[in-house]
Length: 240
Length: 218
Image (cartoon, chains in turn brown, yellow):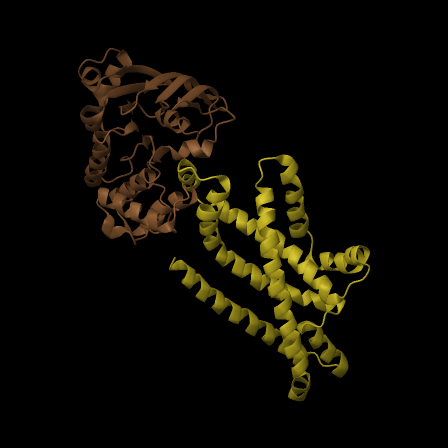
């Protein structure tokens, strides 16, 4: 589904991703962990070209992202992304937030888009907030709307960039619950998170990144109980 | 000191006519300024220096030289050369429009750049193209934020349109000068003109406050 080969990313002099090689299969839930500044968010943002790629290739569903012939907007529509800061559109209602990309990108008519959007809102438990503006929602509700908005495009992959890091502790659970449900439905997911409980429970594979490299990857049980690499051990001893 | 209200009464129809022209010139100036300013703002934000630099200097020139100098330049030099002939009103309209376009461009640019980067990122991540991101996500938010400074620009432009009197465009101050010249009186005409401008700017202030509240409702 996703194939990353020798991915490098530099910001000026700063080399954030040094040589990333990752394969992600369909329906797999991959959790990326690591200390801050390890490049995990940048890695995720390279997967839909929100961040440009300095070197190497990223292939999604058989298409190379940097290939000039690939319509990047079309490809992005297939890759949903959920951000730490939600990034809902404040001038649109909850319903309009979800229907806007369906109507403009997928060219659905308004009625079908609204019907689908209401189904998605029901799925994340927010159908009563359809007419509300994002400002009036709690952080957990905003993030659930953001997930519904991404799902509206019927993506093949969902990327989560620290989706619970900006939330008050009591709201983390409701967002993780929605993500867990998505995983159970067979969505291919790449999740950057500090929620080790989620990684252990929902993840099929955990990737540990540090200083721009993938240091270790394994199934959750192995990596949490028996980390091989020194840096993984040091990191896990701090967060667990 | 005697105050000759009869002069004001006699000139009242002219003052009203002048006020109307003042309003028309500043409304046209700000509207044309908004349309031009939008494109100039986009031009100035271009990634390519070759596109950006002309717009940067367009703005530098119009914001960095006095409006009166621009008015003389357009009325006596540029427009006669380009159009062969010009009227005072035409020159004021052109000068005000171009001048306000430079200020409006900076207002729009500031408005667009004040929108959080996450907005464009989210929109792009959903597959929207550059035009759609601009049209549906960035512009509506930027426009709302631009309303207060645009209102200020409108008020400044309305007052600056009085410079039109220097090239005999028959706006408000022009008729004040005419009355002063005819009767050798300064208090009555200039005080009347000042009060008339104050009425215009205060009305505009109230109207803009109302609009700001309206748009805040979303």
